[in-house]
Length: 516
Image (cartoon, rainbow, N blue to C red; front, side, top):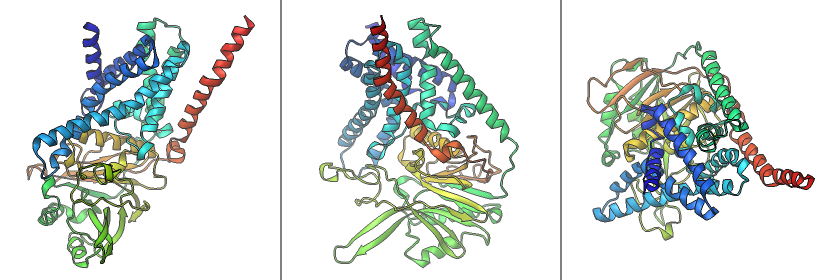
């Protein structure tokens, strides 16, 4: 009974590794993760078969994942014309199934470790967890949400290592170091070479992080002013035409004529700005003579008069006094949110408005405003690492509508977006419609992962529920190693380790036995 209670407690503590808890208590979250990882290794070590190791890891991970991903219950309550009891059944069923799917990648790593000789298990645990985390971020279009490395989201000195090898390498280093209690307390093996390796990794990460922060601490900001706007529009009113008046009022607050770029959230316009010059004119009038405006909207194309069919895109437009200057259609769509995979076999519709699935955009290109170059990312796209090249640009712009999310999901989304800034060595401009006034809805993250202070919070004190903040765009830093090579070096490293484990190490052991 005591063992089962401890098992359950460790599983719960594993759920406190992720935002928002780790952003409030980072040290506590690191300790929770250390206990969780060490206990996973202990379970593998005590298992009598791969099947037993699989199921022990499944239930431990399932407990932590259900807590960490509980925010996904909220989107189901936007389903219309469905009895509440059915909505609750669907929401909790999907939460269990999604987390069960995500835990499979932990279990796969456990099987690999179980099949590994005991003296190599510690190292293989770190490699296999990080490798299967990469697989999770790639397979079936990928879901790299809540990587283990996210525990460091509010520890900038550690985040700097992302600029070298990316998030999966940081996961490897995190698992390798934080699993030390398994060696020191359970195995009582203080002289193990893995202990020395973990100490060296810690020193490297801290020294490199401190050096990088010091190196770029004196870089001056660009002379480019931003106004980021969260209008806190309720989800059921997002497509109401009156929201245009709300945004106009927020854009034209004090100091608006000094702004170079206004940024509104995803689906902030109820109009298709590419198919009607009148709508373009409305938004063009929001700008002063020198400014540009980023607006999220739905774009409609390829109308077929016979079938009355058409394509709809989740889009991003840049406008100025002369009209629409740039349009980007979202490339990486959200399963079940923007399209239904295997639609023939799945009975319910997507969560976003309308019964029609969104179409996939073809390409992502940077756009230039003045002397600054920006790369667009819409909502979900910002969670993916290494799938776009930010080299040569000054900032990423991520517009989102997190009104779909539960509270913890909003903070997890923001924390993931911080990773992209450090990886690519550029600033991240993030604007979301989620009502988190003074929180993470409107923010600018520097290339070092620091959240910048607003130069003017023009609305927080005036109107409850809205957040309008002005920022100066931080300067970019030197191109990072990750921006040039992405996750490729780390994946090669993993393959080399697997080859050594299942070929060379076995050969060496066989040779030693033969010599005896």
